[in-house]
Length: 196
Image (cartoon, rainbow, N blue to C red):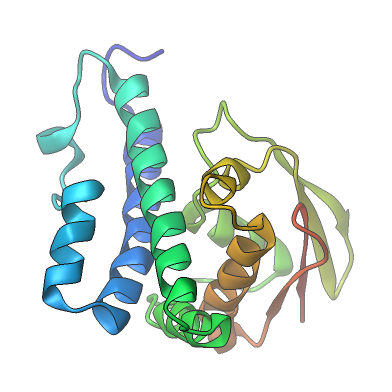
């Protein structure tokens, strides 16, 4: 546990804000103002880009853990709400894909670069919560595995299969990867593949 803010905390906060923004994009697209206000009252968002303004510096790890949980539960709630209203998974994935396309271009010249970019963007809990590793790396394919899927508990809370989360995330990542002529595929909820 850290007693002061370090680069890893800012890195985590950026990932939290990226995940939260996807939820906000879905809310903006499919909910009216009153509905968005109701969601905000249930699951308050983070609105400062400056971590030092919002974090409890006496409990850095605990604060970040709570922030991850809040972002994850709000996302699961929104997906459940939209599906219950008859919004299709394809419509949700389209919003995720478009959000992915909005990311600024990065230096990606290899599949390993693409993997590292994902590690800087995707929220899979705190580093102590999850283990992700590359299991296969070839010229045109890189496979990695997510050993501890934190998303499952939040989706299960709303009687949703975690595979829905991974389908939406696949669309989001493919939006990011479109400019690099790369593809991201869920082999399973835990196994992922990046291809040229």
